[in-house]
Length: 88
Image (cartoon, rainbow, N blue to C red):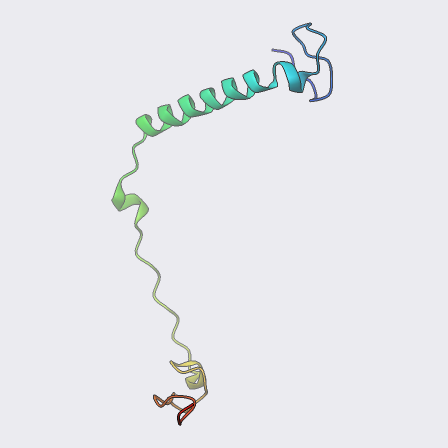
C-alpha cells in the first residue's frame, strides 16, 4: 500500500480535494478498527491472570534516620489541640 499523503496534499483517490477533507476520516476509522481487532486477538491469545499482574509490593527500606519517622516536625509529636483557641 502506498504511504498515506499529508493532510494538506491532494487526496490519493483522485477527487481533487485535500486529503483531510476527503479520505482522512475513513482511513482513521479503518486504522482504529484494525487496532481494535489486533488488541482483541492479543487478549484472546494470552489472557492475563490476576496472579500475574498483582505482584506483592517490595518492602519499604528501613533507614537509621529517626527524623524521617512518622512525624513531619522532627522529634516533636504533633499536637492534637486546635491551632486557635477562643471564640470569635
